[in-house]
Every structure is written in C-alpha cells, then in structure tokens.
Amino acid sequence: MNEEKSMGLEDGRFQVDLRQTIYALSNALDLVGIDEVHHGKRVGYMAMLCGHKLDLDVKSINDLFELGLLHDCGVSSSRVHQQLVNKVDWSEAREHCRVGHDLLKDFAPLAHMAGPILYHHTHWEDLKHMNLPPKLSLFANLIYLVDRVDTQSAAHDEKDILLKINDLREFVSSKRDSFFDPQLVDAFMAVSSNHAFWLGMEQRHLIHFIADMGSQDLQTSISLEELKQLAHIFSRIVDAKSKFTVEHSEGVAGLARYLGEMYGLSVDTCAKIGAAALLHDLGKLRVPDEILDKPGPLDNHDRAIIEQHSFETFEILRRIPGLEEIAKWAAYHHETLHGDGYPFHPTTDEMGIEARIIAVSDIFQALAQNRPYRKSLSLEKILAILETFVNNGHLDSMLVDLVKQNGERCYREATSMAQ
Image (cartoon, rainbow, N blue to C red; front, top):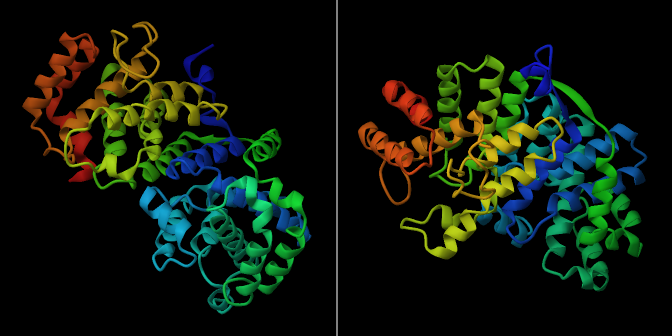
C-alpha cells in the first residue's frame, strides 16, 4: 500500500467522519470551561428536542444538534467563558459570535452554521426586524434560548436540577418576545414540562445520548485544502486564547511544512504535517488564561497543568476517523528521542520523522516568538539552543542540521505571520 493510501487519501481527497469532526471541535471547546464541561452538548440536546416539537425535518433537527455543539466556537478564553456563564445579557457577548462566524464561513462542510452563530446572542426584538432568512433567525434564536437556559442552570448541582425547573421555565417565559421568539418559547415550555427532559442532561445520560448520535456514519470526502482549512479552524481557536500564543501554530506549521520539503517528503505528507502542526496545541484550551499569560517562570503547579495539554490534543483528535496519524504527530511535539518528554515517552523508533519535524519546529518557533517572560531570541541564539537539545538526545540531529543550513529561511517561516 502506498504512502497516500495508507493515510486515507483517495485521488487527492481525504476521508473524514464529519460528525466525529464536529464532536472533536465540541470537545475542544469544552476544555475552555476548565471544570464546567458539556455546555455545547447540552445546548445541542435541548435544541434538538425543541426542533422535534416544532416538527422540523430530520436534516434541520440534526443541524440544530450540531449547531448547539459548535455555537461557542468563537470562545477561547476562560475569562470570556465565565462572563457568558455568569451574566444573562453580557454587553460584549456578540464579539464571540462574530469570531465564530468568521471561523466557519469559508469551510464548506460547516459554512451553513456561520449565519446562526453570528446572531445567536441577538435579542428577538431586534432579530425579527433584520429581514434575515426565516430558518436562520429561527436557528439563531433557538440556540440563544437554550444557551441561556443552560447558563442559568450552571450554578445548580445537576442532582438538584428538578428543584430548579420552575425557576428556569419562568426565566424563559419572562423573556418572551424580548429575548426569545414566542413560538420558540412555546416549544421549549412544551418539551421542558417533564422531568425526563432535564434528567437527560445529567452527565451520565448525556454521554450515552451523544454516543448514540455519534453512531451515525457521516463519512465525507474533503480535499487536502479543506483539511488545511479545518486545521486552521482548530488552530485559530487555540491561538485566540492568549495574545502570547497568537500565530504560534501558524508559525510552527509554516516551518514544519518547509522542513518536510527540505527533507524530501511528498507534497501530501508535508500538507498533513502542516495540519498536525496547526493542531498541536489544541489541548491548551484547558489551560487557564492566567497561566498562559503569566509574566514570569511557571511554578511546579503551573507546569503540571501545562504538561497535560499534548495528551488533551491526542484525546480530541484520535476520535476522528481518518486523522489517527495526525493525532499522534501532533501529540508527540514535546516528546524526545531519549523518551524523557511527555506524555507518552515513545521509543526512538516510534518517533517518526513527521513527529520529529514538528518537535523541532515547535521549539524553534517558541524561541523566535515574544513570550510573557522574554523577548524573541536571535537566530544565532536559537541555533545554539537547538544544538544543546541535539547533544542531550532530545532532537533529531539531521533535522537540526537542515535548520542550520537554511537558518534565515527557517526564521522567516516561523515568524512570517507575526511580521
């Protein structure tokens, strides 16, 4: 079997399961809540049940479920997440709607979600005068309704949720024709009148519901360019989390693709390495903002939290059929040839050239970039540090030699997005 066939490529296209891809994005977004997870999944669950009550067609109901999963794709900051949870009507809420819209609007498989995401914090009293397509308005306002229900219930232990039903239903009724479309209020009041609706959102039941939905095979064929677009969506969510990580993933990807070309790998393999590099820091969404933005050295507690991120990256990506190799390459970016990195401690043979390239590129770009605790380093200093890592058995000597031979170009590739 040739290299491209073994990686899931058929005639220049790439097979992925779109539903599992959406789940992976949702799981990444869940990390932003740190300890409060499954918000998007609960929103999707409630939206779907309301869609049934509205007698929508099967495709629309499925679209509502997936829209619920991804409606907060514009939220990367744990601080923003807290504001959205703690305030019924936060004045800055619509900024994340715009960011989410811009992330999805040009990626064909998910572009239909961009419009509803843009308006999912717009009050009905304003939305109804905007002359938008009726379906877009309905989807956006329904997501807004169930999103607010979930944030209002977030302060309650799920074991006590039945004690809060009346308060939550009264909240929805009180916003009729101001925040929410009256027909959507009626649909919500109908489906939420029984205990089963609320109990279904307990974590142990919600997990089973999501597994059942995920059993639907939604294999789709996307081009390598669309794979790159998808990786960009993930990476932009991560890089938007902190001003100090902005464009980091782009720089790592640019350098990794270049090193792959210099090493003699195929065009398609280089494209996949670039995608893995874009995705390598996905797990950092779970790291609190104050640690990523810390202006001084990390203490042991901070570092223990940081060192979880590459495993989180692996756990998110490995569940997408078709991205198994990309998941491994991305997750190995803090591994070393001597097996003393993290989180898997692979053997030297298990560290394939793709993962080695990303590891070198990640270190190079991080040293070339401004960070909270220091300014960017010169090429000369970076090369000296890379040589130290080679001598310690951490990095591949052949790849570091490639970097030395093409130092100026490597520096441009790693930092071009920041210039």
